[in-house]
Length: 63
Image (tube, rainbow, N blue to C red; front, side, top):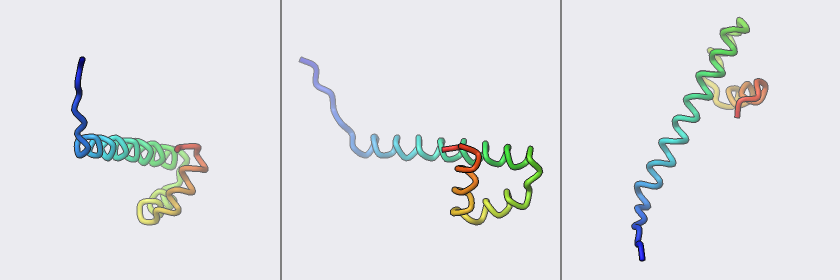
């Protein structure tokens, strides 16, 4: 019989790290699209306004 231990703190830390990496990747991809589309004003606004950033992520199909 094999017993494994469950480390709740390690599990939660791993989830947070994964979410952070996904968020970072999404943000970089959004910045890339906005830059390529010459939307620097939108990029600047998205960097300060999380709701606007979410709108743009949906617009570009990044989720």
